[in-house]
Image 1 (cartoon, rainbow over the protein chains, first blue to last red):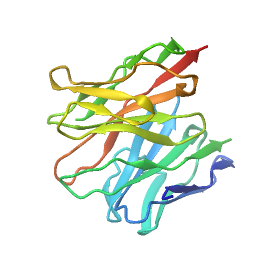
Image 2: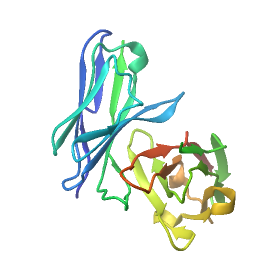
Image 3: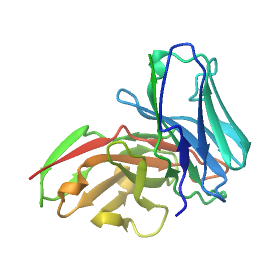
Image 4: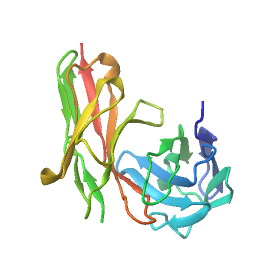
Length: 116
Length: 115
C-alpha cells in the first residue's frame, strides 16, 4: 500500500531551536508539495518540487524556512530558528505529474509542530 | 492567480439528510478540481476529481460533484449523510497547463452530523 510517510508525527521544541521535518514521497512520484495548516490560515502551500527541483517556494518565509530534496526518496523542511508562530501541522504530499497532465496529490499524515 | 472559496465554514446536517458543500474557484482556464476530506488528526484523502469530460463526477463514499463553468463552481453533494461523514472538506484547484502543478486549497468546511 503506497503512501507518503512523514516523520516525526509530533514535535515539541523550544523557540530558537532548529526543526527538521522529513517526507518520503510515494515511489515513482516526481512532485512533492509542502503545506502548512493552521486554524487561521487553513492550508497554505509553502513550496513544491518537481524532479527534485524547486518550482515555487514563494509561500515560504525565506529567512527561516528552507526546503530541499537531497534525493528522489527524501524531502526535508527546516525551520531555523523556530518561533511560536510556526506552530502548525505541516503536510507533505506527492504526485506523479507530467505536463500537461497533472494528477491528484497524496498526502502524508502530517507533522504537528509545537514551538514553546 | 488561482484561488478557491468555500463560503461555509461549518455546516450541520442530520444523519440521512442530503448534503451540498459549496466551492467557487478562480482560474484563467479550465482548471483541475478536487475535493479532499480530512478526519481529525489525519491527512487529506481524495474524494473525487475533475479533469475534463463529464461535468458530473462520482467519487468514493457516495459523494459526487458537478463542475459548472458558467458559475465557476464545483459543489460537492451526497444524497444521504452518514455519521461517519463528519469531517472537514477541502476543495482545491490545480493548474493544468505547462509546468505548473501547484494545488491551491480553500479554507475548508467542517461538517457535523446530528443523530
